[in-house]
Length: 170
Image (cartoon, rainbow, N blue to C red):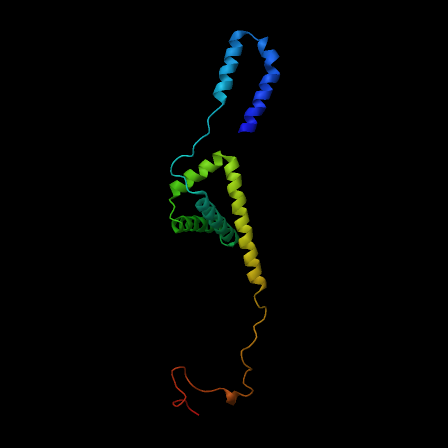
């Protein structure tokens, strides 16, 4: 904000010789426009979600989006599933849809804040993706048997699950 004000001041000083040659009515109009263009710092409206909570909600919503996109069902089914998952995520974090929309619209109207929020969301999603990749790579590819199979059919014990060793038939 300060950098922008400094640049505008420098531009105004460069235009000063031209402004002095202008008619007084235009100079007054131009100065009124310049003063009304400068706004005070905007305070966020009440009821916005905290940044950390908004970050968590967005991460889970993007995971829900990825899940529905990988689903091979019809488009109508995927859209219904997405809406259901969105509601579940908001319910899980105890956030109303109105509060989420208000916060999201606030971030949309402030791109610098949205950018910093999404940088954190992307970092979280990438770390989750790395965790999934590690867990899949650590998974054994072939299951080793616990014990060798019986050599002959006669070696398989004939007992029902409810029988004990004494009541089993020989």
